[in-house]
Amino acid sequence: MTIRNSANSRETLACLIIDDPLLRPTYGCLDYQKLLDAMKAHDFFTEIAFIPGNYKRSDPRTIRLFADNPDRYSICIHGCNHTSNEFGGYDYDHLCMLSYTALLRMEQHQRLTGLPYDRVIVFPQGRFSSVAMQALKDVGYVAAFNSTIWAIDGEGPSVLEGQRPVTKYYHDFPLFLRRYARDKSAFLADIAAGRPILIVDHHGAFRNGYRQVTDFVDWINNQGNIRWTSLCDIAKHYLGEQAAAIGPIGGPGASIGMDVGSAIRRFLCEARDNYIETSNVLSKAYKMLRRQ
Image (cartoon, rainbow, N blue to C red; front, side, top):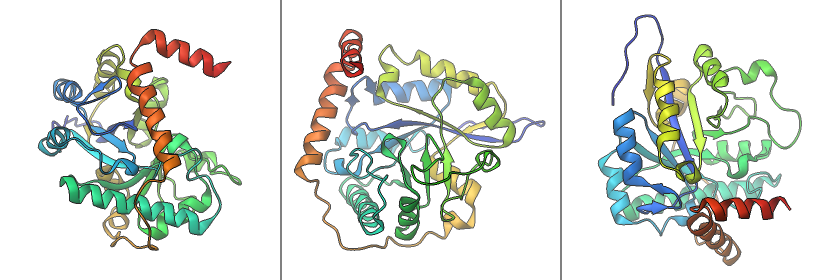
């Protein structure tokens, strides 16, 4: 991967994170081959936040695409079943079970496909509790990446804490902040403060092609010494020995199968993503109905 050198600027790590999609040739508005072509042409890296409940549903062609391009693609953990407020509860034992089940599913996915994964988590809907952070730490995760650093319970980190590249406010478990590509000034502040550039989006970002994303990537790349890489590498860069010291997976016994309710919810979400959100007209109508 290209590393831009600058005698007057330090290296800034960056990653584009796309939430939810299955590992199939296309998902909703996303085409993995077209995204790969865009990454090679514009020099960036994409991490797929993969729902562990989909561990038996990956397509061999897409797995091969990822395996052949580890300098462009990686996957991490996106919740467990991706249900509402999944990691926002306060039952420590239940959160440990969820965390452990997600890891077991990712391990099984790796055994089935040969594709490694990053032992970091992205929270569904961006919601988490401080108890969840303790559970993730105890089960053996490296770090969390989220669109907010505020837990849904209790008092959150101070403004000063939020200015760090990574906060360990909750039980000394690392939490990185990611952003949507809206406010360029926030990303400039990240670069100035030595924070990583963590861009989040969903398959809908590609509804009208890849230009919107690649234009933003080009702007980021023009800001200095930018190196695009995986979330695992970013965690290791900032955490050093703490990330390297993560040991074997530990936790209670668990069944890795998805329950019926969660499976139905995933089916409905995928139907929306693949048949409604791929159309500008249907997507607008769907959003209007939800608002009403």
